[in-house]
Amino acid sequence: MTATAFALIEASIAAGRIPGAVLGVLAADGSRSVQAAGLAQREPEPAAMARETWFDLASLTKVVFTTTMILRLVEQGLIALDDPLTVAIPDLRQYDVANAAERRLTFRQCLSHQTHLPAVEPLYTYGQNPDTLRAFVLQREWRAGPPVYSDNNFILLGIAIERLTGRPLSELAPAGFSFGADPALSAATERCTWRGRVMRGEVHDENAFALGGASGHAGLFGTADALLDFAASLMNGTLLRPETIAELATRQSPTRGLGWEIAYPGWSGGDACGNRTIGHTGFTGTGLWIDLDAGRAWTLLTNRVHPSRFADSGIIALRRAVGDAVCG
Image 1 (cartoon, rainbow, N blue to C red):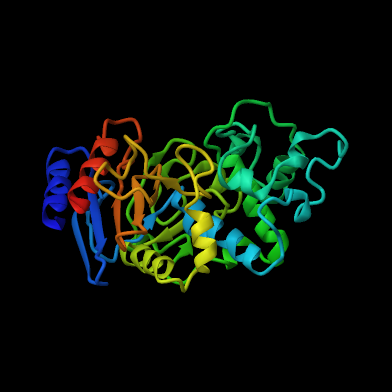
Image 2 (image 1 turned 180 degrees about the vertical axis):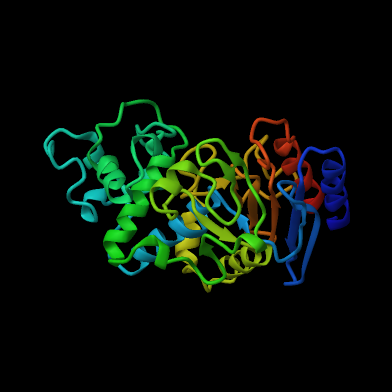
């Protein structure tokens, strides 16, 4: 199964669709296979991909870090899922405490992307002072719309974590992960027109960069082995309590639980996985899927945005094909 999945990845690299990738698979018996192929960087100088390569995990930050942190704070009794964010952020929309819709948003709604907030806002175009941008996020009257997958939900959750812990997110990265990484050990992402360089070891997401490099929606770096370690700790009950994991994997919408997507027809994890498979992807070309019933997990890490996001990487089809091969 793993060999078939890796062959699909090698074919994608040979076709020039992605520069390189690392595939990691954790079997139900605890054994794992991790294989790397292609390039961690094409330009300005080529560098080989390796099992130990660090990746900008992009939106995997939302689930590996932010969702887990919020649920641990719930377990500690500091908040409840259905509490409003104002329990942690009393100054949220502080100039309109009677009417502001943002003051009624709950942790559950933000985790499951069931808010009125827009998908994304180009915060980095308003300046690069992290404290001022955080204040802007908190006091902005966000335009109302239907629930969508929103970075803004998790930016707010990240601010809540900072308030509840009294520490900046940059100091809270889980073991095996970090906010930022050694460029020489990292997969390159985009040649950024805004920053004027190939991003390597620095967060690709512009808003996370402007917020100081660590945010609730993006900024975490890690390796394939770190992600498999995370998956193992989730499945064996050492990361969160069993009742919390059950809540985590309960559908809040047809496609989502708390933070994570839950398997549905046509999703990124393919159609061969179990119904209680949770997963998430990242814009840079990353992904992690955990089949809670089968005790199996896999991660596909690519640098598909290198050197530009404006190319047909075929990542959507590749993720699904890899998932079907791993679970088939």
